[in-house]
Image (cartoon, rainbow, N blue to C red; front, top):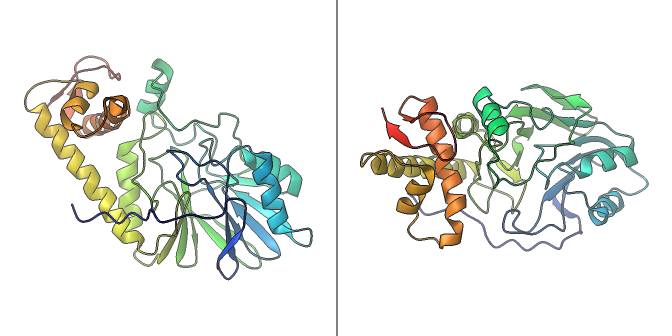
Length: 307
C-alpha cells in the first residue's frame, strides 16, 4: 500500500456558503459525526437556474441556510441526490417544495439492489449501516449517462452502485460530484445489504477509466484534486483486505466475526462489529465470484470456506 492520500485538514464554517470555483458553492450541513466527518456537503451550482446537489439531512437550519445562500433573486430549478442515506436525501422533498423544483435521482432506496442483497435485507436485520431514507421518492429517475441541461450547467448521471444501491455521481465538465463513492477524508463504507462490494469494485473500476475527470467534489470533506490517486488507494485497500481474508480462510471455515477478530488486531474491541460487517461484504463478494461460499444459507453468522 502507498501512503494514504487522505485530507483531514478541513474545517469549513458550517452554514456559510463558500465559493469553490466560478458558478459553484459548497454549504456544509450541521451534522458532523464519526460517519459524516465535518458534515454533509451541499453543492449550489449555477447563478440563475440553480441546481442543489445533496440537500442533506432533515434540518430546518440547513434548509434556511440553503435558501439564504440562493437568495430571493434566484431560482432553484433542480434538486439532485447522489443516494438516499439519511445524511444526504431527507431534506430534498422540503427543499423541492419550497423551490417548486423536481427531485432527481436514480431511484428510491430499493432501486438497484441485487437479488442477493434483497434476500439478505428481507431475512436479516444486519444493522450497522448509515441509516436509510425509506421515504425517499424522486420525481425524475435518471438513467446512466442521462444529462440534465440548464442555461449555465450540464450534469450527466453516472451510475455508481456499491456504497448504496442507488448511488449516482454527477459529471460537470471535467469535474465530478462524487457523493460517498469517492471521498477525500476516508475510504468508503460498504455495509450490506445497502452496500454491495461487488458493485462497488466495478464502480471504482469505471471511475478509474474516466481519466479526464480532473476534480471530485465529494459528499463529505475537502475537494479532491487528485481523484485517481484515491481511487487507486481504495482499490488496493480492498484487495489487501481480501488477501487477509483468503489467508485466514486457509486455516479453515470461519464466520465474518471470527475473521474480523483475527484480522483487525489493532482496533478496540468495540469496533469489531463494524469490522465484521466489512469482512461480511468481502465474503459476499467472494461468494459471488465463486472463490468462497457459506456453509448453508448465506447469513451474517454463516461460516465460509474456500472453494
